Image (tube, rainbow, N blue to C red):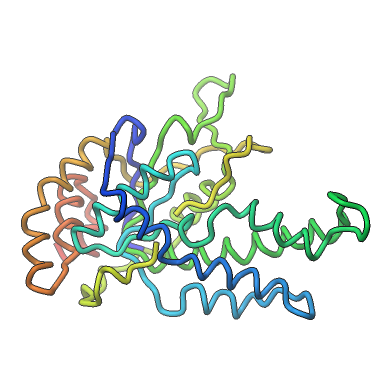
Length: 276
């Protein structure tokens, strides 16, 4: 990863996109969720972590990793559609795995349910399955962050939880907490050569749940911040040159990324990684 940034007041930005484009983005990786279930529900009832990791993202890398809460999912996918329209590869993990809690419920109905006792489960099996899946998926998330150039944390009111401790921000999502903490620790790398692969093959972040949080997490800091309206202005500014590159058959996500970094005004270290 090269840089991370928080997009403030994301929920104040009304983002719309073509419905067919949104549906296509969401459905692009549905088969991957089915395969995850297959790995867990095999005859031996084993979870093959290595195989899952390889099949999820064998060689995939993204230009932009979007970290978000489940409640903002539709707006996030709309943003991803606009970014893909600029020639970027965008990763939104909720489009790959869906709701992890729903997935675990499906698995537990087969692996952990007590025979002849509907809606009653073996506690040890349920907790072990959940712990294993969370570890596997969290490592996969960190791998995608490491392989991405830019992580954008889409901060909104839905991310926060109420608290009476003045001066402290808290979130209810362990996934966002993990992503932002990892983003502060991951090694920073120079930009890779722009890929000429079809941007329509980009994988469709952030796994979360609409359920009330069961814990609170201090909100980790981000290296930089930008207001949502400024992000949208950058997108709008680069539409014409990005569209021209796509027409030429050479979608160039760096058109947006360079404009974004210019607006963000990164420090000397990141400018060095960019070759500026």
